[in-house]
Image (tube, rainbow, N blue to C red; front, side):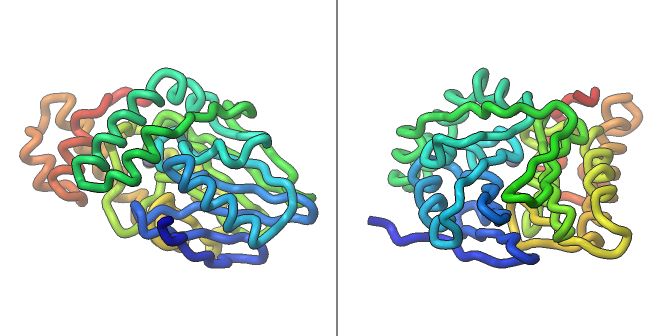
Length: 274
Ligand SMILES: [Zn+2]
């Protein structure tokens, strides 16, 4: 029996973040009167069950799940939460249908090669749950009487990023559109769309305030997101220049705000948005 991992932080009135050592992952919990919303479910069924048990220590109210995007570490832990509504962008469902099983194999192998057989087995044995409440542009939920807005601002970190806004608390769960403590992950990204997606996210916050919860790392403020928006815009421009043949990849790597590996991955992604 592995020990329970993670700790809760209350970032605003009844809006909680659970921080995990594994992948530095942050997931969310919004508690209303008679209902709650779980934002992301972690990376496999065992981790999801652990999260579900920890949510139950906070509230006994029925839950709804929202998945910020299809990547395994945010979406594979859903099964222990069933039966409940599972919200996501429509592209999240499509990606899980088309690529979920392959991603499960890839990540199980990734953990096994690192000698983490326990997590590898957990991922390999996970049943991928498809979201059943699909969002195209946006949706508004009532979580125990509390308004929660789901919004998609176009392709960015992935093709199916959904941000979760709790207006009464000025909290936005950003998924991996915002990353704290490591460079943003461009593996599955649309570099030219990323800055616009962050503009959309910033538009949800007041000019001064708000808390933004990244998919990985500690919560951040508006200024952090403004800075990351500028960095992703710089990377988008470098991608555009290299694609147009006006710059070599080596120059782009030199000028990039991010490490070489991150920049090279970004340069390899589609230049068209979406
Ligand atoms: Zn991701």
